[in-house]
Image 1 (cartoon, one colour):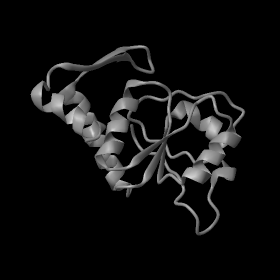
Image 2 (tube, rainbow, N blue to C red; image 1 turned 120 degrees about the vertical axis):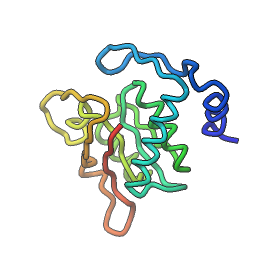
Image 3 (cartoon, one colour; image 1 turned 180 degrees about the vertical axis):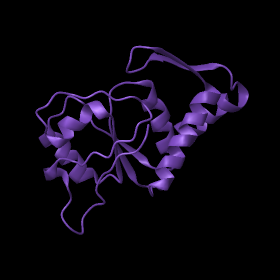
Image 4 (cartoon, one colour; image 1 turned 90 degrees about the horizontal axis):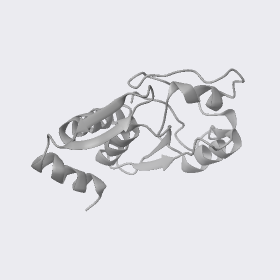
Length: 156
């Protein structure tokens, strides 16, 4: 039994019970029931499937602590994939190493992190959950030809 199986128990037994209460990126309180969190996880799993993520693949997360992280992680579990978390405090060199070594199928990030991944000196942009971002990994993180699968972004 894994975390995804454990999550399915309260979804089946008490779908309208509160599962997650937190503040989103805009400071608003998010209060999701198990049914809502399950719906969001299913949508993430579908987005992952559409991008070719399957069992055994790795999905890198370069995200701030936010409610969407939970639903995205549950979506990864539904696909049988593994999470490769990347700390926001890491520098580009550390990020490049993790991406090259971990060879994730996808990189999940948010708009405010894109300048860091691109190496832009312009500040951080703003993002709203649900938007689509296709950040390229730092140049040093791109796998040599014939090794790895690269990285891409997808909606939260």
